[in-house]
Length: 163
Image (cartoon, rainbow, N blue to C red; front, side, top):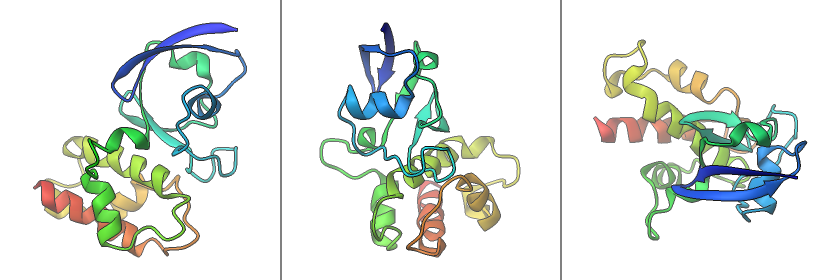
């Protein structure tokens, strides 16, 4: 067992981990953060997406020992004192969540895209975001229910709101 320290949803945490564990396992078992889901366990579905130092990653493939000293943000970080994050509200408003299994990972990938959007060279302003850019940002996330139209519209709405 190895002790690691990192920032989790804004708080510095320490925990003992097994060297072979993945971030997903530690988030769910050590910290009881069940919003990060295991879908495929192979990095193909995106249900386990979290942000590490602001970048979306598949936590089912991310070795826990590489987390030491980093900043990790899960879907649970987006609920501020009972208030939905704009992405969460937009997903509700646009019907972008049906069964909900993929939603946390989808929202975290969308958040990474939106947070980084001003640095994206393809579009000059959020109003000019293209559907192709959003699809590229969400490419690692699979949804069996929505057909993606509502998800793309939800992300567009948040970008326009921020403009």
